[in-house]
Length: 87
Image 1 (cartoon, rainbow, N blue to C red):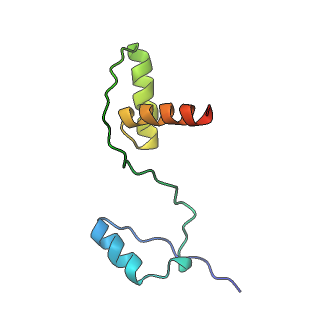
Image 2 (image 1 turned 180 degrees about the vertical axis):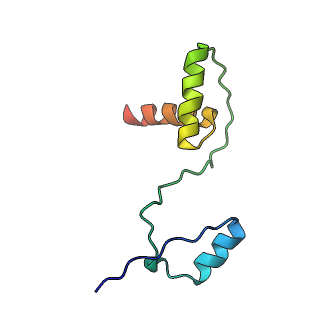
Image 3 (image 1 turned 90 degrees about the horizontal axis):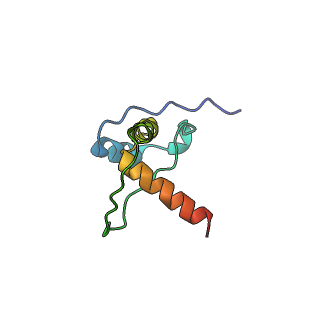
């Protein structure tokens, strides 16, 4: 008989998260809402400056906010995804 998974507690800091994961059995918790996360590791050595229509920039900012990332990172993610798709 399977039991209902426990909800994840609210962890407000890295220290709280580390302490929780050090002692918790994560198989007992509902992780269905978790999503993969990207970490920015590669050094950014070049810059790109581009002019866009205001409406397009506002749309990009809104879309980035909905994904919870800064708009400049969102633009970079779009470029990376397009390049990876066409390789």
